[in-house]
Amino acid sequence: MAGRVEGKVAFVTGAARGQGRSHALRLAQEGADIIAVDLVGQIDSVPYDMSRPADLEETVRQIEALDRRIVAKQADVRDFDALKSALDDGVAELGKLDIVSANAGIFSFGTMEELTETEFDDMLAVNLKGVWHTAKAAIPHLRANKGGSMVLTSSTAGILAVPNIGHYVAAKHGVVGLMKTLALELADDFIRVNSVHPTSVNTDMIQNAATYALFAPDLPEAERTKETVGKRFQTMNVLPIPWVEPVDVSNAVLWLASDESRYVTGLQLKVDAGQTLK
Image (tube, rainbow, N blue to C red; front, side, top):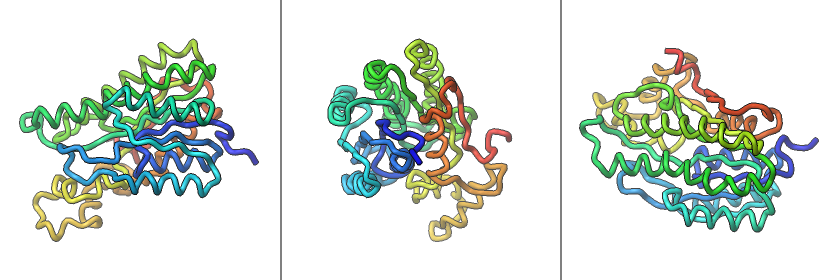
């Protein structure tokens, strides 16, 4: 039985680990070849360890184990020329582009009063401008392909206001504006553009000491465990879970990438365990 995206080529940013690796793997499991990029380095304003080259190498290993082709490059979504070059090289090798998963993102915290200029600028540069760069680099290839699907990763924070992460909220709301505008501008080219909006996802972005301290400042550091902090994450959701798994978001990305959603564009698809119902 053919896969749901058999014969397609997908471009995934932030593919070294977390949601990005999961999206790349899920698309590859259903028949896609992958162009993968990641910064594989640290941004100083991010309070947890970001991906490293070995992480991207592991993504390559897992994709190749599925007998799919992958072109993996180091590229920073803040650098349009580097991102475009990486994508162009991937398209030259794999032949075309059908699917875009603009997934690369960072997380940090602070009240709007406390945030530094650097923290605010880095957040918008990666989580908003980086998404625009991804779309801008991909559009000519999707047009040449006579259509395709672009999936932008937003968040429940792209729907709700959340204290202590106002810069993240602003960026993720901005992604929705990009998505809706791109959906209008690219409709005549049969390029569909949608966004996914996860609640908390079980990745390194939240499973770290800095995020645990944000959610449990009253607890001694030794008591800030995944289980203890998970109970506080669970209070944000309607379904009785603390977070979704990366593959839960990947399944949504897969549907939006596939022909099963061939007439779906401009959609904000929530994978939020009911968080936005509150």
